Length: 268
Image 1 (cartoon, rainbow, N blue to C red):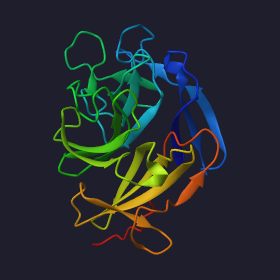
Image 2 (cartoon, rainbow, N blue to C red):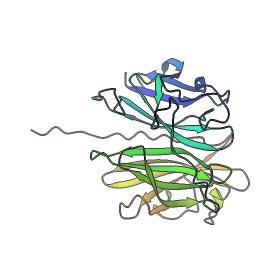
Image 3 (cartoon, rainbow, N blue to C red):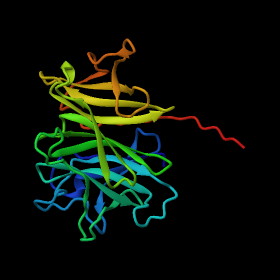
């Protein structure tokens, strides 16, 4: 097996089966497509008013082939969207096979706990919605997250947070916001997909204009800070936020995935 995929079906039935799993040998033809399953601690409950009553899909999946599959050390670690049917939060789950998932239960009450929620502080840009995130884990055990957030919707802007354990997160900055004065993302600015290549952060993210046109933009870090990112016009390769990379037709952009290919060299 060379590829695994976790995705949302595009429907909301308030069941764990709204999230699915598939495998591929080439990234083109997919098989073993099946719904996710709840483990000992359900990741989706279907019960109002649980924060994870339903889900709009996975945010990111981390892979550790040498995991012990105990505690919080599992082969697969999933950050996923949880929703009451209104507010959205980011949850955490663990799996040995990528199909059956047990939610993170920090309080030991048998119920999954969200690891990032809205602040619920009046005036905050990410008051009651957070979702659509990228998570990077480093060799020293630290984590970084770029997430979508907002007030009454999760597409108002993109924030940055850090963690020492992948569970407790500290908000660091709001990177982009829909009122930044950029036409192509003036209605929505969200769905960050971030990679770090040769010490440089690169972000692909989604936007929607006031006229309803969806697009995908690109940004790179300014000094490898992970916080200060400059948008680029790919046509001129100079800092600009006036032109997106891709215009998208249809229902819009629910998530962006980037496959980074690296060349490895063995040294003796």
